[in-house]
Image (tube, rainbow, N blue to C red):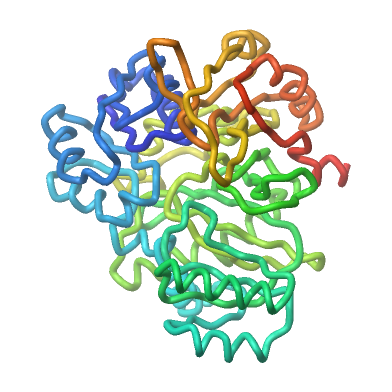
Length: 422
């Protein structure tokens, strides 16, 4: 089987890494891929941008690709899956209309309301004046959300109404329209990624991301600075509740509205201190860095699973099996991220870290005549497995400093909530 992975980040490296472990996969095209994907056996990079829908479609058709796995949200929101399916190709990734779950916060919120899925109360605004008038009647903290794609950084949790007012003005000035204002939900977040084939939805292990740049969850939001799985905040009984009250009603509503959703149904959830679960947001693709912690724990053949989802036959598969372990992924970022940062810094020590049992997923990297160099804000996702969460944390932090590049930064408290809970 020939597969193609669309994207160039750490998530896509992890997908290609897992897919190429399948004996059924003979070749994996990474479009455009990165330094890590290029080094995988059975894989090669193809220099096509993720928004080049025509180029990607023509390439996959010409190469006789059997399964296309779309990593990022941008090409999905542009309709890449539709283009590919129109050519008769099998795709793991939702259609353009299905991708609105992530591409439009207001559309997703309205769909959840129709489905009876628990989510935060809020309103959607298409002009600043109405939004400010609504805001004046609320109390802080309060949440302001960009309606469109914002690379995981379009959510502002305002601690004061003045902060919320500034956020609204900034988002409208940047061209985001509409904008969502909703209540702040207190509690603990958990990411639940599920596989959907239009009829059936199967959750993966729950994970907990760390969005803030600073330790102790301080500073601005990022695309994610680290993650661990499985997250103890969502044990088996809670996962069953999430599937029954959130995932299945959402997929059912999509189906009722004529949307054949085949891809990842990714629910960002808040669990209140009282145990109440509400959806913060939906995404239409594998999480990054969640994928880098979840896939190393999967004991099954990912290629066969995603092909079954693309073909609408998830219900024929046996239950997923998982390694009896925990995984922790720590993101190594460039100095200055999520603001301005330098590129082209030489990276060393990956082989030494991997010799200690770590799995290093490359995100913002590229090969040059000088070797591997940085090429993005989030540069590497360094993953360790352990018999327990504690042992995984110890392993990753004992060995991560073997990897070096000028200005490297990472948080040293990934999984702190679970470890504190004991």
